[in-house]
Length: 278
Image (cartoon, rainbow, N blue to C red; front, top):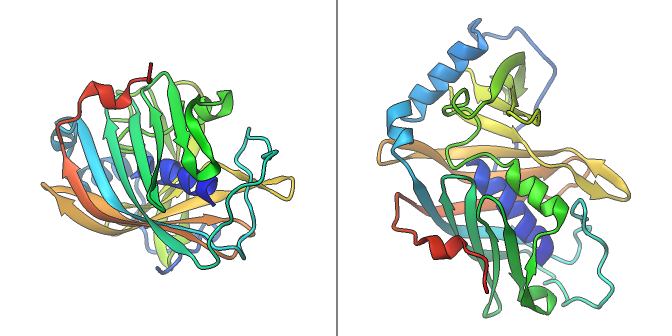
């Protein structure tokens, strides 16, 4: 549970949603016929504008994330081996764990999760990553695995996949119009400068992101698609940000919810927060 909570929070929160969305097949629907460029332009406007987002250098988020309980299947994170030691028992009932996440330009991220008086920490500084996992009886700092580094390096910057995508070296293509929560949404394929591609769905009316493709997870020896749904958008200094995120793993009944309680734009973050411990 603790390992899964860390993985879920990292992927979901850097994407900056409990009615679950449903993605259907491509449909003409009532969505206006727009190009990928036009959709992105409307999305940027709906989220507060390019100039305003370019002035954001850091974000701090506080809230609670779901974890547990014992009736949930264990999901293996890609690249991680099964533990060879007995781990602490997961709580029988689902728990909500307080977290604080700091994000800065350059894909810098620091995540702290509280549980039973202990703090798990996961940090990526744009090149290196480290973690401290007392939940797993690991009280020494550990470096990211190669797979964890790869995942962290491909995460969206703090403003998401579409804001300033061309300047980041990405390209965007419109693949279809799908149903998400019964509403038309543009399915955009975003390919970064290294050729890594993922999909993001933009609501055809609000032009806010409502669904983002996540990193597949391994369950029963197979990788299952992951989707994160973004909901409850609110204004933070004129910028629209989701305060509720729900992650769904194909083939798993339970969903993982992250509820954000507070977002601070441009907090004062010392670089030491993202530095590797010595």
